[in-house]
Length: 609
Image 1: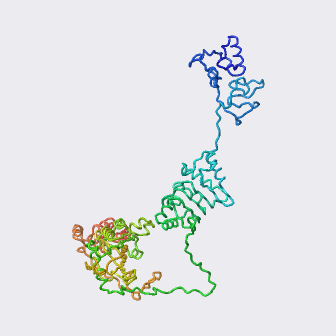
Image 2 (image 1 turned 90 degrees about the vertical axis):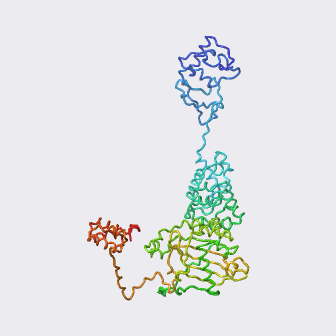
Image 3 (image 1 turned 180 degrees about the vertical axis):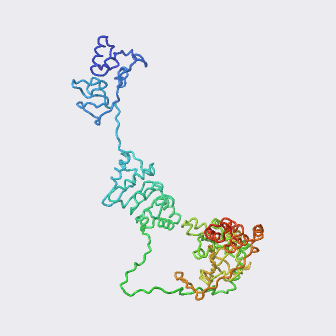
């Protein structure tokens, strides 16, 4: 029976000393430590030791002297050492020349038997990056340049290292690690499959960063649901420009679109985002191709164009196939009602009519050159604001970006919806009976079903009632004769509106449709044959100023008052700013005019007369 057995008889005093010497010789207790009986155990239950159980290693440490400390035990790399392989334990010394073992060491062949299973063994795992690298290398086919990352959660390597793939609990950071490791493969990855991984767009945000040159990408059977997730994968159109084939089958974004009958819209959205695509969901994308120009073999020099105008001049309004009086009466009545009482137009529209409008907020080049938007002759142009138009549901497809929802919402179908939309539009005023050159119209018959309709296009200008600013517009009507007994006919409308499309633009004047030759803009305008006579300066005096400014100048001496008048005449400044300009320049007229020319671009409209 082992000397550490709980059932061993209490040793006599002589045997106690012999055992103590043996333990000291073995290095298990300090030389100055005394042997103690089981009854001397401080704390715990005195004399009560479980019967039939071998004392554990921790029990040995309890029986040692308080001044002696046992070092922690760690096995060597070989956890299954044989009888001839001593255990390597931290804190134990190597055998000395005399063969003795230093204290605090435990011999592998001593009288105390300690099972290796009772000592905890720490198994070293590879880092997560190394485990993912092993996984990526396992799935890589360098000959085909194909990286197969299908169903990552089912891979044996993933299970072996207890990895968490993206889409199965893993994060976008885990996905980024995988993509970065894939970017280090040689040769570069051309085909990548991420099918069957429950991936969303948020988990694929780093794909275009690490693998920008992939040619074929499969995202089959994942969880991509919305267009914004596609934007997460490719945030800009200049990303992944080498992608030729993309598979999104099995994703909600595709399946729901086809289920709702919007498959064409879905394909259009994806193609716009991936402009280089040739195959989407295993179906070829129709490409628009042009014949490449062939180099000319002729040595004949090409004559440069010398025309100064377009082949056809701008003609006046064009009305054919219908009585001009019918068109004029319709337009006068329509615009008068539109400006003053839009509810009265309920009888002018067909019950199934459609209406939409588009706000074009850009300033035309001609208008920018002339400066209509900042002209002093049109001060109300600065008060114009596009927000009221945009908030009313503008159907400008360039601004909407092809969003199918907004495209449908901003197309008002049916009489009730048309009237509701008209009432939300800003109040306007059309001077339809004013100068004829401010409007241009074209009207001619067009087929409509089994009968004929009338296409009417009007170009002109309108005034916003709230701001007083002027805008240009184009309005296209599809008209149809009102049937006898119809609501339109009973209320005096001979023709009724089937379709109404309205474009509101920044003002660009009516010179755009002025009859005459259309000059080629690239040709410089020739100088007139006769020099123009200098304009006659208009007389200007103190009385030309507003009364309140005249009163302000009354306190100035006559010489200074004349300088103020001269500055006002030459610069257009009002009296107050003219006085400030002269005062800041020592009442020197030349310096004041030069100073004005330097800063006039930064002056507000209030500084001028």
